Image 1: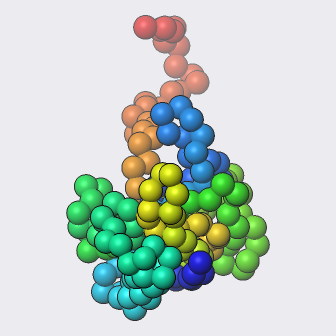
Image 2 (image 1 turned 120 degrees about the horizontal axis):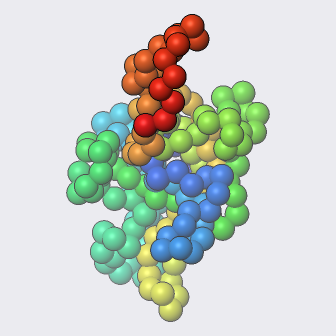
Length: 178
């Protein structure tokens, strides 16, 4: 296994406080981390080197298809924000460490860690070779909030105060209801 820390990456598909749910079933804690191809070139090279070493030493050098490796080309993904990035998906059965800039623990109600924010992440690459196939996976060990970013797919829509009229308490209009 190979433990790697990558700084200032964008978090996508964040399920770091609660396990992700897929088709009605709880799965794992997880996140996908976006590494800018230029800005994180050395990190991408380091991750690729570790992956290639594991393939050689643990999986007898077999050729793995791209979908069997946790590091993928974001330009081939159909998600906003993935262009010009490599995406690295990591998960864990145990809840990862989630901390703030000052290393204090964060909880979901803090609202700091979300899909779109920037984090430092610690992962551990590991080779899988069992009845479910051969692949290179990443365990999500922990992350540290670094900075806010534009949220991905918030989906939540709310009314603005501009959608309402000012109501004067002195108004004698008794129109209540629709």
